[in-house]
Image (tube, rainbow, N blue to C red; front, side, top):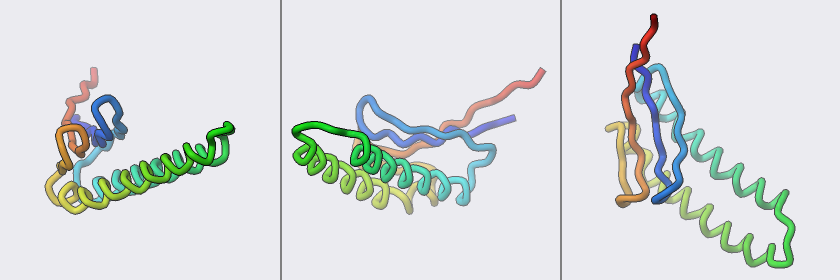
Length: 104
């Protein structure tokens, strides 16, 4: 049996991945929606849980990162859904890896 690992590389050392039984437009759309949800959740978690003297400055920076992440995803979404891969640069891209799962 094959499974498909969909991966969003956010930078040199950060990525998000999910595994799917099928690799089709529907599963790729679902992956994009999950990435968008994760980006929004990270911002909300930061707003709700981070307490610091510098919170205002850090929130401003985090908002910029949040907008940039959505821009990257939105830029790559159409190519990824159509072609199973998309790239902004060598560190920010979407890809799918196929894996064989053995059953004994």
